[in-house]
Image (cartoon, rainbow, N blue to C red):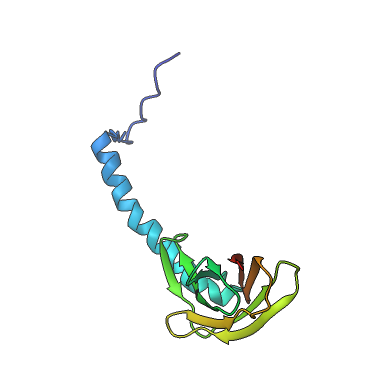
Length: 153
């Protein structure tokens, strides 16, 4: 191995030593720029195509009995930086379908999210409903979610 070439007359050689401290500072300066670029892309990407929406839901209980009322709370939003920042999606039409253990539809409805991206569905389990695992399917343009609950005699 030979010596590195020395600069030609009239040229200067600049050497920057990358110490751990300087690397840390460089990373700290780069993080905000990357975040700004990513958030800008996420916020303005709706103009360039359909946005991906995430649907989350919760039930007031995990187990019900025939005759009980079920409350399904739905939240729709779009994520920035994955799930770190969630922007509520207002005015999104959401459809729900509930099926019994035999696969028969026992409830179907649709609604629209409020300004906070939330929506609530309420329905009663029939008194003659059979026991077992019931399936919930939620869908909107840009996202879907499924889950379930149990009915016990």
